[in-house]
Length: 153
Image (cartoon, helix red, strand yellow):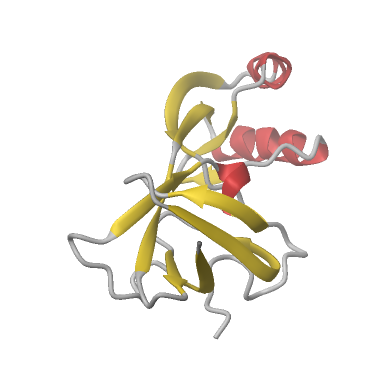
């Protein structure tokens, strides 16, 4: 089976129009070891010394010399907007206080669709829009550099 030997950030690997891809949800983009199947049906193995955070556009360098691009799968998410930056900061604080993985966007916060959390943010005055979209939450303040799709080479 083909094995991943290195990870490269988006834009730093030889991505060509005919490159093979693997589409992964957020949970499968934060892994150390996982059997994957490319979008074309070919198996490969992610087996690295430590957990990596793959981003949309990351490159997986295989032991065969091939490169495979990572595509962030669309997931059920909620995007929250507020009438003021203060209100949005307040929502972000409440999400963080509950350890809800959140993606910070210009003027909005995105998180996985969860009825309890949606009710909370609506109760705090947020406008909620449900979407099917890629989800890439913040890594966190204590996240070690070099584990979010950066090269291991």
